[in-house]
Image 1 (cartoon, rainbow, N blue to C red):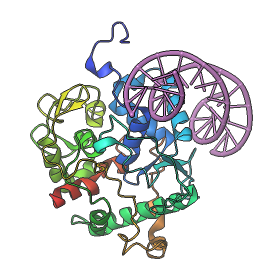
Image 2: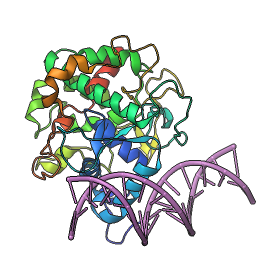
Image 3: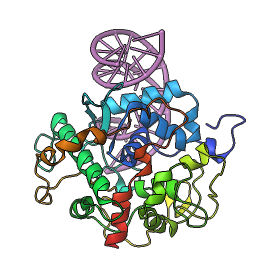
Length: 319
DNA sequence: AATTGTTTACAAGGTG
DNA sequence: CACCTTGTAAACAATT
């Protein structure tokens, strides 16, 4: 039911469920986990529809977080002060969405007792994610411009295919880095200029094209130089109907790259006790910068700056 | 007090 | 038609 006087595309309700939106937000973060407030922010930044009636949809979203097993709560560590826990995707719910599209979920994710592929207990998963976050950040910090070793890990884990569904998180989130001329950097994220990865990321997304009216890149919102969305972005023939994949390596492959998804054998360099390597540098590795939570004028969180680069890059590398 | 998180309940719509 | 998913409301507890 469209509201009267609200006819712009951007004000229409996005075709995503709260689960999808939340998964997007979480996936977009560097650490693959976000506090509730950041999830709110992500959604409101990108989907104008959700800038209204916040009480209603935020209640629904919280309900979803609690109700669905695919979301796990990760307690803050002492060095991560703030309200509420972090929320992450359960490591085993990587293929929750059909073809990686956030438009449609395969089935309800339920934690199974005999799930040997991943930690099932929230506490295990939480620990695992914390480790992943640390590893990711330390790898990025240490490697400068060239590929962090995380990428090789990703190769092993989120192997899947080169095809990324138009509604897969990379393609959705990738617009953050997209500039009209193919220039890949965000105006509000100075750091990103130092990341050549974004060019590759852009090249991934840019050959899939069409407008996506429900969504804003954060650059559009937070700066006065909106990015033209006219020409390209997703290969969507109509509202919610993706065109044929340009290339596909399998029909049912989970295109949501959930790099946190462990495999029994694919983690050669990933013992369950990584902190040994990382314990020294932990203070600078807190998953979210302390001041991002409440700041309205500085939306360029480190998380967003590095958003999804490892996996996006991976899709290029594999290709 | 505000935010965050849990839980129950119900309605609507989709699917097999 | 039964079942499932999703969205919404609401009550309530816990936390900051």
